[in-house]
Each structure stands twice: as structure tokens, then as C-alpha cells.
Image (cartoon, rainbow, N blue to C red):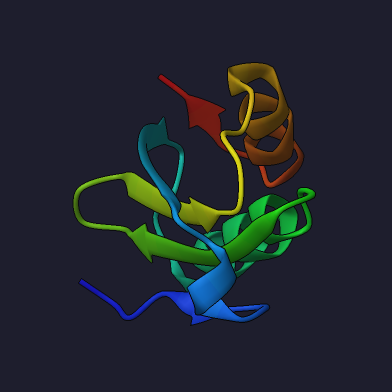
Length: 80
């Protein structure tokens, strides 16, 4: 697994959620997911594992499924 890409202080982000995603297959996909999901309010780090389709997010509060799904759609992927 790749190390999470921090965007803010990791100490502030105590909620960890892992999502199953389809449509990710390359480094460009990984970067797009990190950018779009990382832009959600409260997100501190995003880790993308292309081989399993897992996206793990650290945030300072729970994220809504619809917000994560919309960010992933913007990145060209689909939340299962």
C-alpha cells in the first residue's frame, strides 16, 4: 500500500474510511482521485491502492457517501 498523501496535519484527522472504487487503473487515475477526494472539506489524507481498488481517507469528521461518490465521479471513477 502507498503512504497516504497528506494535505493537512494528520494529527487533526481521526476518522478513517476505506471505499471500494472501480475505474482506477493508472497513475493518472490515482492522482485524479487524490485531488478530487482530497478537496472535500475535512479531508487530511487520501491513499489509493490501484491493485485492490481501495481508497482510504483520513478526515476530521465522517464524510457523506454522496460527497465521496461525487468526488470520485469527477475523477472518472465509481464508488461501489
